[in-house]
Amino acid sequence: MTSLTALRKQETPRHTAMPPLPATPRLAVDGVTLEYRTPRQVVKATQRVSFDVQEGDRFVLLGPSGCGKSTLLKAVAGFLSPAEGEIRLDGQQVVGPGPDRLVVFQEFDQLPPWKTVKQNVMFPLLASRTLGRREAEHRALVTLEKVGLDAFADAYPHTLSGGMKQRVAIARALAMQPRILLMDEPFAALDALTRRKMQEELLTLWKEVGFTLLFVTHSIEEAQIVGNRVLLLSPHPGRVRAELGCEADSLSNLGSASTKSRTQQIHQLLFEHEGRP
Ligand SMILES: Nc1ncnc2c1ncn2[C@@H]1O[C@H](COP(=O)(O)OP(=O)(O)OP(=O)(O)O)[C@@H](O)[C@H]1O
Image (tube, rainbow, N blue to C red):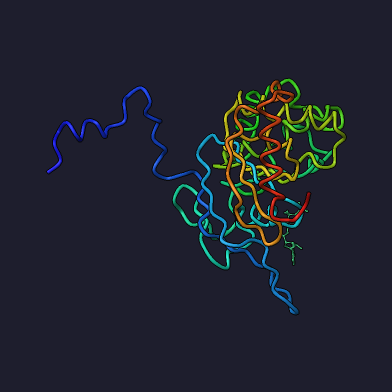
């Protein structure tokens, strides 16, 4: 029989105990294989990919072109059903698109220029019949205040800076009160300086507002800057190579030895199986 003393010895000391993870993650991707079926062939985009995203995570999918990152995001958004495995949001199986998962696309040029900032934020609320006009207007103004753009509610997108447009695009998604925000290479087409500014903006907004983010990129540096957790995927078809914590690799730490060594580690994990030097 196990003695009380022996049991006590097995207990984790209080001061080193980790906070328990919530029983149900915000997003669970469980053994997911994704395929495209064309009349001539079946293209396997991912193979048995599993990961969990907790509330408040900035979770990044990182991998080479064609490894299935965008396809995974589409599946989480509900536009594609797994050939194998399951995707769950707060424990509920994802079976189609929904306002609880919104995708923010590249460059934020999705803002119709003929609508004011407020009208842009109201649009999905009205189009999805989530709210009536008065409530939608109220929700839009509250959300714009949260992202620091209430003074620009009646401005048109072309009068805003790139960073402000990003805030509007995110505000538009946040106004729908999504359970997770999905971003697919949002900064890929931008020049290096603008891209850095946008990454800063995104992190500032995350700190100010707090949301759960699933972010796709093929830039190692961007993954380290944006993510607190990074999932590395193998080349086509995407399989999980590793998951890393990158909370310490903030913008202010970019040149540090620890960040450089993690970059090196990611590089090796991504490419070590390709016979590269
Ligand atoms: N509509 C489609 N029909 C058939 N195959 C597709 C389709 N869309 C993507 N694929 C294939 O699925 C695989 C994964 O594509 P996906 O776009 O998800 O990769 P990715 O990692 O996001 O790449 P990138 O970083 O270049 O955007 C690729 O081999 C691609 O050719």
